Image (tube, rainbow, N blue to C red; front, top):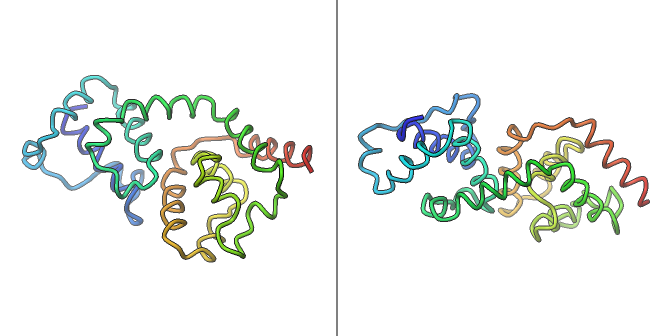
Length: 198
């Protein structure tokens, strides 16, 4: 991957995670940018260094990690990625490698005091699931997996019209295609935990 390709990859992921209409897979990571505009950037060295140090797949994962872990991808600027990108990438790699273990731990904690219905109940405002996520007790990966199992996002989208949920909802939707799991296996984990606790 050339430095310019690395920059284009960054822009494609920025568009993917911040724009409702842009889909990284649908547009094959393409973005409208010129070589001329790239050479005018003061942070060009970062893309040159990243393209040299990482394989094409690692560059993709590096940007996925940084946008997925950011509380608000809209406000994520390149300076933050230059400063904290490698740390975020390492944290993301650990989380992805230990995904099943983390999901199990978070699910046990989530349902230790609550019933299944109450966790997803949004009739009185922010549901327990969202509160736990905002307090960092539930990871973005688990939020994606729960949506793969319970399809709660559509329901929340209709009931919760506040900007907090809107930002979280977009993150879940945009991160979802990059989380490859066996849904049946994760359903089994949830059933075991909820059944054991209740």
